[in-house]
Length: 293
Image (cartoon, rainbow, N blue to C red):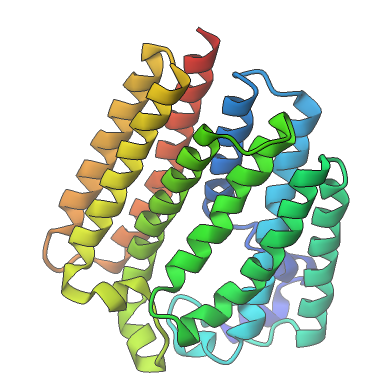
């Protein structure tokens, strides 16, 4: 987006971009683990109002996370090709507006959290510092994607306890699968920014694992598949779940093999990230069917 286009862009459109609501893949990929948890915990039939609260909550929370990320990175993003046109980086929106939008999104998430039980509410509170700290982690922690993965994992804990009021053994299995899955797809996403991140001097899992990064991504996906299989066994899911599991494993295998190819064009990393949204929904369909049959 050119400076001229940014000037002509209406403010509401800039705010949508700030919240990343114009890029649904990143919002949906946070929503998926939350939906996994709520449907599994409720044996496939969660209360519809609760599902609505969780969907709206993920949009509000991920929006707040994107704003605080852009706030911390407002001086770094202009140096990165993929992020240089973000509203705060390009100064299309002022820092003051960004802070106001952050608190509005966080307030909306807090209002929704009051619908949940006490344990789920306090898990929501516990997730906030992790969301705020993640953008700073890339400056001091060698694998900041782990912090993001832990933040993603709260979606499982919050949604599961919203149904059952407790943390159970399958909850932690699903949490582990979510953390491994997030480490996998977000490391792939970081691979597209590796050169820019090295130039700017910030950390990422793609930089940390360096020449072994593709194999590590493969390990993360294998761990995800293994934990999902154990979850299916733990919960006694119907064989239809295993069909979804096989499709997911085939997708991750195809992605791993593509990453092993030399001279991968940068857009491929984003495509693999987006493909994981579909893999997540396929697993969700398998989980729902696996609990209902």
